[in-house]
View 1 (spheres, rainbow, N blue to C red):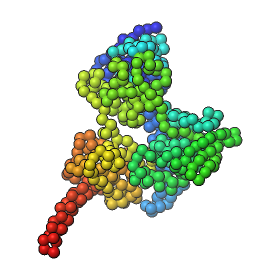
View 2: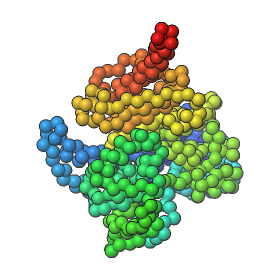
View 3: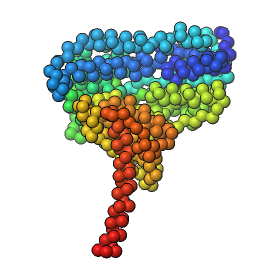
View 4: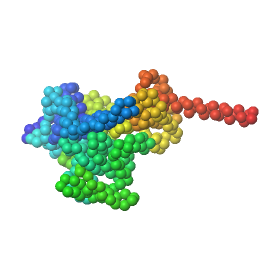
Length: 474
């Protein structure tokens, strides 16, 4: 057993872990990085990168059919699914060198490709190495959650970790779970020619504002995806040589759905099982490792970041957490997590994006709020591009400070960046109304929504003045 005594030991080479390791090396701090699987973690290999590549392929096929409105004859896309998946593989391969063992070794990071487990509160075992570091950062991420459905262990099912290895197009893909992963992959596969059914126990895309998700769900259904909401999967079983039969139950009773492939997209579970956290005195539960707002665990030597820390499960959150830990460990600066500034986006078509408080949350925490809206159909660029479905919805306090922003529509994931900055800098509607937006752009909808705040506030004094006049002279 070889003893290593680095300043920092990072467990997990996903987005968060790689960021911490690279920063430590840049500061000349001895750092060991332990990863049992593929460098780049879930995002590069099984999540964000391959899913967006598949979505892009589906969007290209869909665009070929939508030219009539522009005076262009629509064309039926001929999809070579094997080539589509090669495009996905090529996208991963283009990015992979940035996250490779070779690159991080060249940066000065000692990379150990083994499974890590805690021996005690200050020691980690990884293969033939015993690592005794000043500080540890756990960044092991999460894995697909497979719910305890009767028969699920007896049928071949896919998750986000296996669906991108398919080279034959599913004839009928049944998706269990109507969250962002399930709905994105459902729409992409439908556009590439598969029949698709989504089964969701609650409301599809339920973490977002239903006023906005209605746009996405309406479009997804119009493209032919069968979305079953408030429907429970009671049992799955094999059908024929390679098919699957899914038994479901809703308010109308029970029935079965036959498909060729089954995708489980019912949530995520933190990767903690093999770490032996109890040996290190690190508190955890089924949702993940318990951390303070400084991302410190119950063992003061150990931090946890990203999905494994039990909060919002996004790649950019892991990167944000990494930045906070870097500030604390390398710069000795105070750093606390602020979840209110974290944006997220769902890459359905239309996209859905959000940052800050939604309407329901704002009403609970503020005595008086304003809801400001502006539709895409009132935007000139949206009209020119025939992308008029959607709206922006702003939530402000009584003084006009922006508490939250939600967008449903074309390019929502890009447009939410502006509002994430606005909320992080505590800007108000006066700031938004005062900036100049280039014309014609879709981002103008945000400024138009902000201006409606003044329409409301100026109208009220005018009404009061008219009432006083009528009382006096009427």
